[in-house]
Structures are given as structure tokens and as C-alpha cells.
Length: 566
Image (cartoon, rainbow, N blue to C red; front, side, top):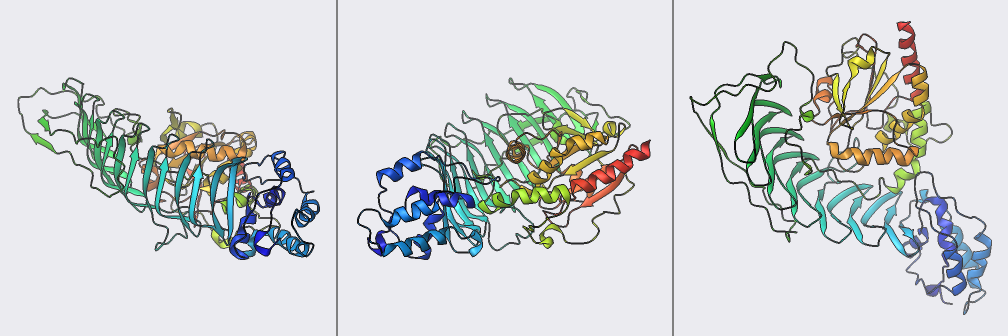
């Protein structure tokens, strides 16, 4: 056969599995010229089908290795081949087995099963580059978008399994400092659709934080809510509607906290309750209620709407006029002497199935490079050492130096009551009465799953019995949109085989993060240990997104504090 008619058998493809991708052989088309991959002979087909392709992942793929000499020789003596092709084929095979660190471009083509694509794209210098496509196990297209140096960039679009558009918008992977980010930020206008094709929500992002006016619609196309965001938290006037178009709730937020007058209406338009809130979210008695006239809700876009053009979402005007004779409706939560640290997000007065802060995750949890290094990172977070395999440079994990935030030591936790991911109240003050409490504040994410957050949680989860034996309780605080929780738990489960046996507290409006002074894109990774008096005795604040203390260090400090109690 000629140089451009080289036959590569399915067994050659399987040789690439030890390097975490199914079709590394495709890089030959970019590094040694365009090879025409001809039809396979029947024997090769049968052999390939007898060896199912496993899904690439953190643990790596360890397929049969005894195929090398047999298949490389078999390729050379295929029908119409010539003896001189043997050296070339051997060279090609050896080249395909070289480590990925060589830096040349290679094509990754993972499959759900024989002939069913899962993802396809190019990797250069171990970084995903150019257009990548993703498919469901059914073969339907799931997503498409571009990567630049392992960061999403430009337009990305997702579809539901039936082909209807799901979500679309732009990432900015270039021109910004990504040294302290695990994923690119969403920028500009994004749109999200219900499974029936109707628009679900639309609004803008600035550096991955919701900003300005956002509008939301039900699956029936009825306006559900409209309101304003500032730096990712609710800020300004908000209005919700019943399914029949009647106003349901009106009020204002300030930095995520309810302020001023809030009203709740029934489906017939009658006021059900009124509550006034101070600037710190404290409920007080209400003054005589004014008459509120609300303009017609914004019209929903038609089901066929799939335009990606940035359009400013409609704004709902609220006109307030005074009425001195109106009856006074007492506050549902009268003022108390002590202001409880209750996060605003725990009030479900306007709860709904329509997500107010949609989370977008890549179909594959992480990039191919992150998948290959996850086990090393977990080991680092467990022991504090890389061992014989450094994996990442020390600088990306913070380097040397003290991480203790001296200004936090000896002070109480600014917020002690949280809502858990399971919907239950979680009081750290109560937990600390039983023994030291390790509070791990993750950095959060609203796009690609944070590998470091999942790896740290996995390392702690695997050592949870050691923490319990030392009488140390553990709480993970997740900052940011609650919609990201399922993806986070899925990520931890993929690394640890089980869901984390640790309660996850929510800080949706970043109230605790700001009070601690650890706000960043969402939050700086922080580990706090609270003693039995409710005081912070250990405050590790990471210098980078990957900088986190080891399990061994946390156990040592926690055990010492537990002994002090005795």
C-alpha cells in the first residue's frame, strides 16, 4: 500500500487507552500528513467489538496491553501491503505510544460505545483547543463550543436530547487574567430555554456574575419574575407573578438582603401579608400600606424563539402612591432584640421550578488534562505532599508561607446559621458545643465544575471516620448559585465513588463570604476550625484557587482543640 493508504486497525486505537483518550492515533493526521483511514478488515472488526471501550476518567483506562507486537505486525502484512511498510508501521505505532507531554496536537474522540461518540476535539500541549463537540449516549448532539488553552471561549450552545435548544451564550477565555480561575467567565447576554422550547430566562453576565435586569418565564410562557442583580446577588426591585398573571410578591433587595416593604398577594389580587425590613434584613412593623399599581407583565417570547442576538430584557415598572386610610397589616416576623444570622435565600416565599441563577456545566466534568491529574491532587490534599510525582508546580498551590488570617483568629464566626443543601437548618454554634467544627468554605463555581473543590471534599470525605474519631465535626459551605450543587455532588461522587458524607451549607448571596472578607470571583478557598466556645482558632485562606490545607494538618489542629476541651 502507498504512504497515504496506511491501514490502522481498531487494536491500534486501543493502545491509546493507557493515556486516557480513545483515538490518539488521529493526531497522526495533523503531525505526519493526512492519512486516509481505510476500511478495517473483518477480523479487526470482530477483535475490536470483543473489547468494549471504557469511558475515560480520573482512574484511567487500563485495557489489554498484549496487542502491541501482534497488531503492529498484522498491519504490515494486510492485503495489498508491501514488506517495506513494516518499519513505517512500527514507527507509527511507537509514535502513538509516546507520552502526551510531547506537546503535539492530537485528537480526542471518546465513545459511549462502539460507534457512538461522546466527545471529540483537539488537544495541544495537553490543553483542549479549538472546537469541541459533545453527544448524549443516544447519539443526539448535546453541546458545541470552542476552547483556548483549556478555557472555554466564544459562543457555546447546548441542546436537549430531542434537539431543542437548551442554553446559549458567550465565554471570555482570552484577554483576562485566568491565573486564579478554574473556568472562563460568562459574559454578555445569555438565554435559557425550557424543555418544551419556550424561553425560561434571559439576562447578562459580567465576569460570570449576573448583572442588571433579568426576566424569567414559566413553561407555559407566562412571566414568572423580573428583577435586578449586582455582582451576582439580588439588588433592587423584584416582582413575581402567579401562573394566572396576577402579582404574587413585590419587594426590594440590597446586597442579597430583603429591605423596605415586601408584599404578598393571592391569585385573586388580594394582599395576604406585608413585612418591612431594615437595612440589615430585620423585620419590623409596617406603616399603613400604599396602593400599588403594577404595569402589565412583560410578554413571553414565542416557543420558536431561538435567536442568540443580545436583547435587553423587559423591565416591569412599579408605581407607588400613598393611601393614608389603608388598613395596617402586622408584620409576619416582628422585630426581636437579637438579629439572627438567617440568610435571605432561606425564605421560599417565591420558590419555583424556574431557576433564578442558572448554572452551566461542560458535558464532561473536567478537561482531559484535569482528569489525568485529579488523583494526584487528591493525594496532595490528603497528605500535603506530591510524593514522587509533582504533577503541578508548587506555585499554583500557593508556595511557601503562612496562610493564617490573623484578623479572624479568636473571633466568632460572623454567620452561624445556614440552610443546608437538603433544605434543613444548620447551626454551627450548636455543633461547636459538641466539639471542634471544621468549616470548609469552597470557592464555588457557576460554569465548569471546580476540580480543586471536588478534590478537597473527596480527600476530607475519605478521612471522615478519622475526623469523627477525633470528635471533629465537618461542614462544607458552598458559595454561589444553589443550582450548581447537583453538579458538585456528582463530581465528588465520580472521584470518591460515593456522595460526600458531609453536610453542605449554602451561602447563595455570599453573605458569610463577605463578612469573612474572603470574597473573590465567588470566594477564596478557606478552612476554619471553630472551638467549643464558638471562636475561630484556625483560619487558612488560600492564596490561589488550588491552595488548600491537607487533611493531616486539619486533623492535627482539630485533635489538639478537642483535647483542650478535656
